[in-house]
Amino acid sequence: MQLNEYLNSWVEKGTHENPEKNKENSFTLLGLNSGEYKYKVKCTDRYGNIGFSDIRIFYVEINSLSSSAGTAEMTKQDEDINSIIDKINGLLTEFEKLDKEEREVFETLEIQKKLDNAKTELSRFKRDLNNLIWRNLNETELKEAEIDIYDQIENLKDEIPTSLSVIDSTEFVAYPKDEDIENITITYLNSKNSKYSKKQEKSFIEGIKELQSLLTVTTKAKVVEISYLSNKKEKITLIEKELKINESSNGLSLVEYIPKEIAKDTSEIEFLFDYETILNDPLISINIKGLDKFAYYLRKEIKLEDIKKTKSVLITGGEIPKGNQITGFGILTNLKSGFISSDNTRILIEVLIIIILSLVYIGYSIKGTKTKYYFGDRKSLKNLKEIKRFIESAKSELDNHNYHEAKSFYRNINLIFKNLPQDMKKEVYKNIVTLSHKLDLFYINKLLDRAEFSIQNKNKEVAISAYNEITGLYKRVPLEYKSLVLEKCNKLRQSLSGKNVN
Image 1 (cartoon, rainbow, N blue to C red):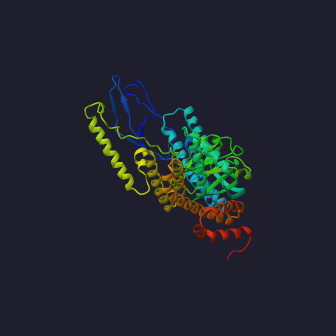
Image 2 (cartoon, rainbow, N blue to C red):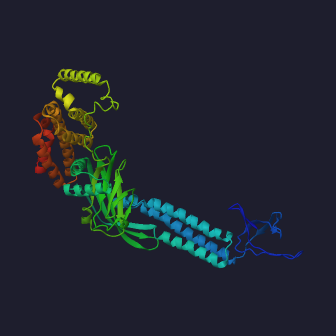
Image 3 (cartoon, rainbow, N blue to C red):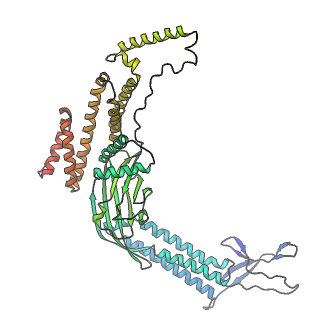
């Protein structure tokens, strides 16, 4: 048995069965380099008893140029792998000379990390090759093990980039159309395996449409030619999307639609981020909490004009509001069984009279609300209370710049408000109208920001679309709200008409 100090274990190098007594036995060890070696002999008798000799030492010194074939072959293997590692070190220097666009590709594809990982893998392959002599393999097995490692090295060379160049590129800002938002949202809802009424679905879709005002997506697409260490060349299309969200991204997801012109399904796409598949068509969902950009690529050349057909839609992670669920009249629900049929009937009647009189008193004590609502329409009273709570919640969300949350409360208010009695409607109508104006004003400011950003990025079409939407909203807000955005609106109009603005 020979000691492998690298593995800190004894390796069996040969066996003699039934050796003759008082006769010398020998073993031949191949592929030894110069150095000190330790060995011991293990003996097992016919009864299974085991004994070991003392540890002995011998030395090998190779002075001849014609060392063993195994040692020469091992040295050549080391040289081959070291040569590849040296090439990688040289590539790192060359990649430092990339221009701006190529540097963006280098960083997005994490090529530096790929090269570092390749060097680690190559060092492991070199170690595995050198350790083959310590494995108890016959000549055929040894050759197969070597071939397997070299195959892995060749596969690795297919993944080591040596150069890259950007052939074509484009950059644009685009907003999804209402039709796209509706189709993507319906597909997203269907993936949840939940059933919603048409009313709930429509309400949710309208909320998602409004939600898009919070998001600006800048898309950068590049066709890149990459060469590899194996001399393989390929063209890829890299798509990177930068996100600007005007609000906290907590509870929000992004649904990315990629049309068939670009990819038949998700298997054709290399995603450089975590995602969930909604449909293999492909349609995916991305958790954007803390995310300011994401990228994916295809191992083929795509027409850059087709990249504009991709759609990014902001989706709220919350459930569709189920509506206001209020139970009916329940004054007697806690009475014990048989109570009315007992001798306590007179007491019960007296209690009911007291309750009725108390309700009449309360009814006339509260300004603007008639007694009949407290006794005959408790559901309406609960609805009224719910509306007041929603109004306060919506105001709080607006104060925190959470427009879509505030709008969600407003939609719930409208659903409940239409079922209120006329007298109760008067009590909250003014507050609801004020909330509506504040929501419109907030949204106008969002549209103004979007238009300004689009003009700065030379996307006049989007700016005009935002201005047209602003015009409709501006007409319906009161004068005191108009004055708050009048100056900005005038500047936008002048910018779109080509006039200079000081």
